[in-house]
Image (cartoon, rainbow, N blue to C red; front, side, top):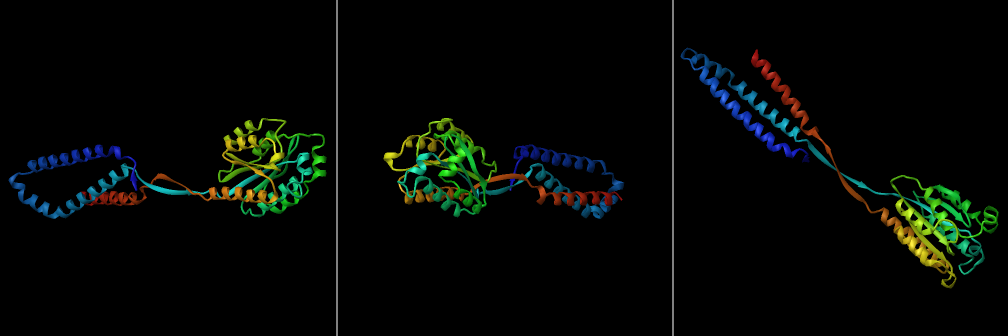
Length: 313
């Protein structure tokens, strides 16, 4: 319990002291006014008769004044609130370029290994949502954010060489920047969800928006980027760019040379994000809470009015 208006406490104390002094001198003056000899007996009788009522009236008035002062100071309660983010929104951004399905250094090929790693992660999700963007020369949303994991798995299984050729046709290239921005656009604005992009690629951007520019936009939107470069180090190009854009957003870049390391890295990313979600944020909210004093104020106010009425009668 705290008092919001402590600054006015000296003023209230001064007013209380003035009221006490005023009452003292007024009472002294009244006593001097009614000290005629022929009224001495009447005054003594009246004082004896109303001594208790006077004491009761003053006591009730003192308590009434006390609770009025307390209410004027605005008593406040402090509410401790624990805010805990509970769910992830994970948008996979998958490179569908030709090298992803042709190279077999990550068995059976880079594309299939990336798909399997995604599905392994999705199987461990509970209240989270996952979506998928695939890009070549252009970027396209294949699966919107969903918590229907069976739907995600079914649609991911259809992503293969023939389907990619049919969807993207002549749009060759690696348009990584546009794919990242498209993924960002499909995140919801719900405050209790953490937004994460997992980028799986084996090449370097050569079309569209500069990935560094896209990463700065992700940072503004509080989206964390993890980048996975798939393939042997000798075949991996542009890892420095992936490292740069992931660090901008507070994420991390990985170089993946085989399927086992790919699965381990995916689990590591999911574990890191999960541990951060479990960190509780506590903060306090102060709110006016006169409830404990207001009923007493009403009671003594009503009692004081009744005493004044009966004494007058």
